[in-house]
Length: 114
Image (cartoon, rainbow, N blue to C red; front, side):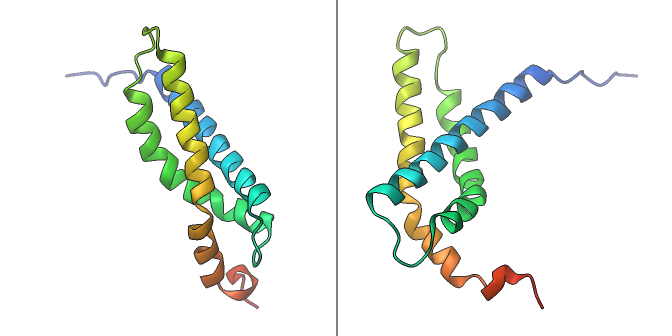
């Protein structure tokens, strides 16, 4: 009989922290874009609310690809992290057109019925 392997929760916790950090930077990108080019149709709250699921979809695969390639023992680690964080902010800034389309096609009242 083989025993199941104990999960290493430290790895899972660090991955969750990294994704939350990237999502936070993604939201900062949305905020930056709304400061530089304010939306005419939708308000900032709508963009932030729609940015959460889009951020999970975007930052999950991005974090898996980008963060796994960073060597933490490298002297260039800090530069690589800053580039990765900058791209997360840029993804948030570029997402406004997508968020506008999602918000515009949403049912009136947020689909709450009634």
